[in-house]
Length: 90
Image 1 (cartoon, one colour):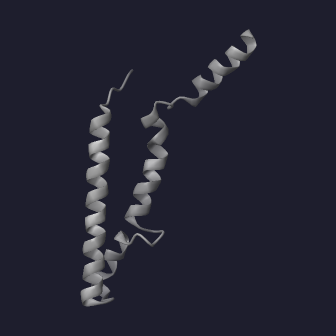
Image 2 (spheres, rainbow, N blue to C red; image 1 turned 45 degrees about the vertical axis):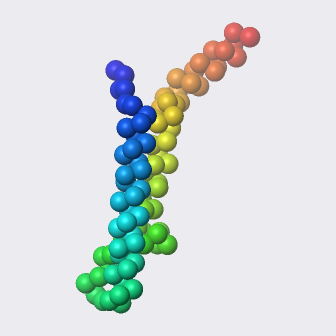
């Protein structure tokens, strides 16, 4: 089964996601700056880029996880088998 996805579509989705996360982070920073560290504004810290437990950090981790699939190297076992067969044939 071959899953064909257009590269332009992937790039557009990633760019839109990055822009939305950036705008949400800026809005959260602005809200925290204007109204201070109020109790009900604490969930906005999820968009803080400097925090390790934040949405931008999770987004980056997911991108790194999905990068091999985007590059077409989704099957490392098959690549290893091809390399071992090529070495054995020499």
